Length: 310
Image (cartoon, rainbow, N blue to C red):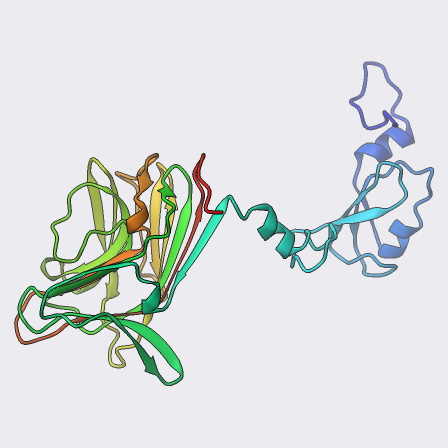
C-alpha cells in the first residue's frame, strides 16, 4: 500500500504526489472522473453534477484508486450500498436484541389495571375511522382508573430512551393524571422512584408538568401548555427524551411548550417491567367524570446488559 499519505518527515521534499494525497480536490464531476490512475488524490468535492458525480457531495477514493464512493450526510437506507447507508432492514436485524420498540394503541395490549369501583372499564372507542383508548373515572370524588403494560423487559436507565404520546384530556381542573415510564398511579402520592413522566395536577394549575426521579429525589416543572386545547379540545402530541445523568427533555406540538429537567436524573438502575408504560387519571371533585384518551404511546429504548427479549 502507498505510504504517500503519511506525515511529512524532516527535510522531506514536498512532491506533487505527496501534496495530492493530503489535499482536497475541487472539481466538476467530469474532472473528478478524468483524474488519472497515477494521481494520488484521495478526497474530492464535486462542484457540478455530471459523469455520475453529484454537486456538493464529497467523494473518497478506494485504496487501489479503482473507484470513488460518496460520503453523504444523509441516507435513505433503501439499498445495500455506501451511498444509501446500508439497508434499513439490515440495521433492524443487526440490532433486534439491542433495541426495543413498543407501541400502545389498543386496550387489548394493557396488562394490568387498578380502578375505583365506580370507574368504568378501560375500553377502545372508534371515532371517524380512528380509535383511542378511553381511561375514565366515575363521578364520585377521588374515583380513579389506571393501566400499565408488562413487556417482560426493564428500561435500563444507564441508556437513553424516548417516549412519544398522543393524548387528550377531558378537563384541565379537578383532576390528577399521569403517563410515562414508571409513573405512579393517579391516586397515589409520589415518592422517589425510578421514573420519567408527564402529569396534570389539581394543585399545580392547568398546564402539563414534566417529572423525573432517580429513586432518591424528584424534580417536576410545569410547562406553558394547557392540558385542554380550546376551543376544539383536540388531542396533542408529547415527547419525553431521557439522557442518563444529564437531562430529560419534554416537548409537545404546541410550540414553545417544552421544558428541560436537569436535576435528579437517573444514571443507573431500571424501570420495573410492570411499569414500562403506565398511566391513569383521578377526579378530585364529585359529579364530574374525568377522561384520559390515548391514541398512541411509542417507546424506544436500548436493552440493558445481560437481558434479551428474544
